[in-house]
Structures are given as C-alpha cells and as structure tokens.
Length: 373
Image 1 (spheres, rainbow, N blue to C red):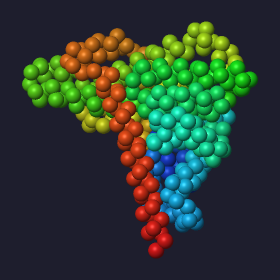
Image 2: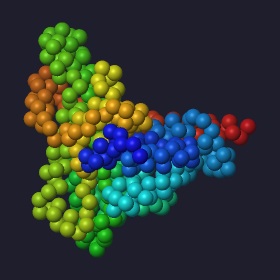
Image 3: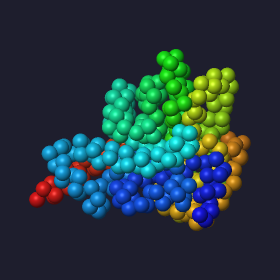
Image 4: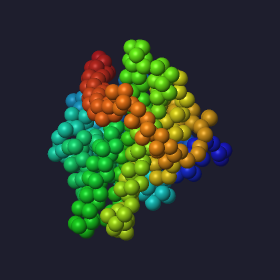
C-alpha cells in the first residue's frame, strides 16, 4: 500500500475522520477503500451533510417509498440511523484494533434541543438505542445545557462528541463536565474504558469572522493597511492552539490520573470546520497548522484529498503559543473582541444547523410527495 501524507498524519498521532456520509459511499466500496488507503479512522455527520445527501440522487428513494406512511421526521431518523449503523459496522475493525480509541461515527441530536438538557439527554438515548452499535458517538452542542447533558450521558456510558465549540472558555466547561461524568460513572461502579468523547473545536469560521472585521477596518482607511494584513488568517489557528494547551493542562494532574487509573480515555480535541474558505490561504492550512498527538481532524472530502496530494506533516499544534497571545492582544487593541466573535459564531452555528434541519425535513416531504405520484 502506498504511503501518503495522510499516513504520516496518522503516524504523528492525529486521527483522520471524514466529515461526510452518504448511502452511495456506504454501498459502493468507497468507505472501506478510504479506511484502507487513507488511514481513515472515523466519520462525522450533521444536518447539513444529510440535507445534501438526501437532496441529490436516488439512493434513498426506495427506503422512502417503503415507509411512505411515516412523517418526515421519522423518515429522516430512519435513513440517518441506518446510514450511521452501516458506517459503524465499516469502522468496527478500527474500533477493535485501536482498543476503542477510534472507529467512531457521529450522529447529532436535533438543533432544537441545544438549550434543553433534558431533551438532549432523551434524544441522545433514543439515537443510541436506534443505532445500537458500541462505536456510535452522539453529538451534542457545546452550550451550557449541552454540558449538563454531557455529564449525564458520560455517566450513563454513551460516547459523546461535543460540537460547535469556538471559545476556549466553553472548551473548559466541556472538559469539566466530561471529567465529572466519568467520576459519576466510576462512583456507580461503571466501566470507564468503554466510554469515549471528543471536543469538536471549530477552526476556519473564526478566521472568516475576524478577517471580515479586519477588512472593515481596512476599508475605513484609518489604520495602516500592512498592519491589518499581517493579522489576517492567524486567529483561528491561534485559538485552536489555546484549546490544545488547555487539553494538555486539564488531562494531567491528580484528578485525571485517578480516572486514567480506572481506564478512562482522554477527551481528545477534534478540529472541525477545517476546509479553507479563503482562496488566498493554503487549502490545507487548518490541517497542517494543528498537527500533534491526541488530536482528531475531521475533514470534508476535498480537504482530505488535498492533504493526501500535498500535505506537509510536522508537529505544529503546540508551536507559537506566545505569538497567538500577542495576536489576540493586538486584535483587542483594534476593538476586536474574541469573546464577542465566538459567542456570535455559536449562535450562528446553531441557527445554521436548525435551518439545514428544517430544509432537510421539507426536502423529505417534497421527495416523498413526488415519489407517491
């Protein structure tokens, strides 16, 4: 088997997950090939991904026709859980070979539950039971209510992917909730080794937001253009590196050591939103600049293929932390608040997933109506 930059990335301690799923790739041999040839060790999904998968082609038509009496929500959960279950089966070998560190497939609770811990817990348990695979990972949002749900779900023995993290402070709350959930589980006599979690820290959207603000300042013409240009395309990576530093700090010391002694796994940072939106930036920027041990990068197909072609692998995730601190001080001096940016990005992310979910349900209704004719 040829060695590619993806294999080098895996050897550097970073797990490669695919931020995509559709039924065609599950049935035509593409997923097993990617697992074999691209060192792929996991997969993530969300309402936007399923919206695109269901809107194109005919792969889901037969199942939609066979269950035409169900409402659109029930039809979506049926096709979603079937796809995720099939993907879990494809990754079963990875799950076993990695001793349950990898081989996970994520499925997301509905965005409408983002601020309702009880609803999130109930839906997570329903999805867990419906997929019925030990390597499914339930995605919950990194809201305060999501942290309450995370603690309970970890205590209950579910694998959890905490998503839509933009702020390091939110990441800190997520880590604390995860550790508390492990402690709850240990106190109840539960097996800690069977539970896994990742914290999905979103990357490129931070640059999109801050670069847009820098462009506004440049257009105003009151600040040196070269100074503003030097700040572009740096905040997202610097923010993620702060999250990694927090991860290293929190998963050490006596509290973690006690849990690790009972078999607990670290809650690894997962770099999400790693496609490059600005064509002026290198297309693998958000992969190359965040490489290091005990991390995951979930890439859309185009980013994964770009890294396979020309990615450069070296440990970068803990380099230049001081430069990042200086960057954020300079942004603050310009009136750009990182806290305000990350708060807005969380709200926008939740709204975007809700919009995709609503569009997805409407699309299923339209498709089932068309198939019934």
